[in-house]
Image 1: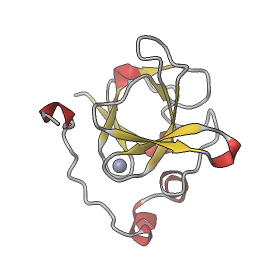
Image 2: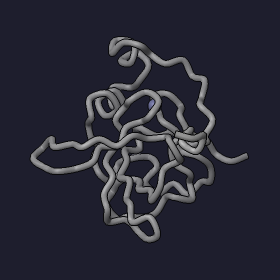
Image 3: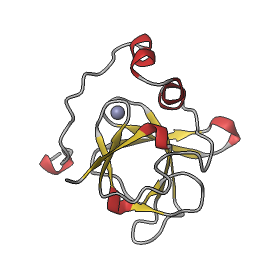
Length: 142
Ligand SMILES: [Zn+2]
């Protein structure tokens, strides 16, 4: 294991809740349902679906920088979609809930649910990170 395994992104210094009670207070009810209980927002409802601003999308729960805005693309699915994540920013887990074989995307810092990743994205990565707007915040480039 060399240094190249380390995240290249800066870690945000936001205070992180330690218990689910604290998470509940820190997040809106919709965010809590999605981030902490692996919910999914209604398609075409999220605030970042058509967002074109430049910057970095971070985790709405802990501020961890996750996705560069230039990785965002229009997938037509109704959820904000990205073809790559920042190095070390997210973790992937097999998810067999709901009778489907999917890969869950979670924040590598706080473990909150962000969405799922699929192998039908655009080249060169071929990945489609299908995320909930409620799990994201955009830090715009100044
Ligand atoms: Zn997080």
